[in-house]
Image (cartoon, rainbow, N blue to C red):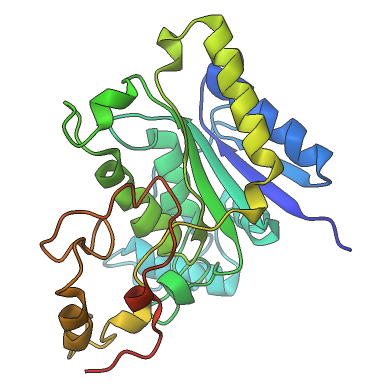
Length: 286
């Protein structure tokens, strides 16, 4: 059996950080399971975050009006992306599992990791209009967020000062990972480790190690499949009317983002739940 590969995309400046300890636990446990573990240590690599014309080697398709998405798609097709992007794309292509390890900055990833997302997940390589979401290019791969917060867990509750963590995570988990086709595993959230005693931090790492032992058997988070939508410009990529009708009797929305004016499904972005029967039907029509 071929050796499986995991990629950890890691963003923290300090090798003595709790994030580094979390990364090391993942490396140790996955290697013990027989994985080849690749690590992109973005700060150590001095990975360039800004997406510019320098990402394309050679002539541009439209030098008068540079459009990053179009130019990088053509450069990917022709093998003319910069060496650092191509090296990261090879890692992603090889990996069955991708873990993003980072401290939560401004309710999102650090700028250097956002730059990795912008530059590495190019159109054509990671997505296309024909291949997105559950039909996406990476539909046979799994990905997850593992991150630390400065805030406590209660601050990210629906009635907490920061608001619902499920809403915070929707753009990253749906708009980036699931958009590219990844099966998104529930995030590993380390709440406010800087304010925890040493024994608690050790317990958090032990819990992460225990989860990693069965990580690949976990069910992914639930998202609305493409089949529930009219995937045409004429139809506006809107949900089929019949699907909306079927949801009328349901107490909750379909997902955090597709709430349909109803209460959000509880913990849709932090806990894998049994698929709703109506969201699993692949053949909905007008």
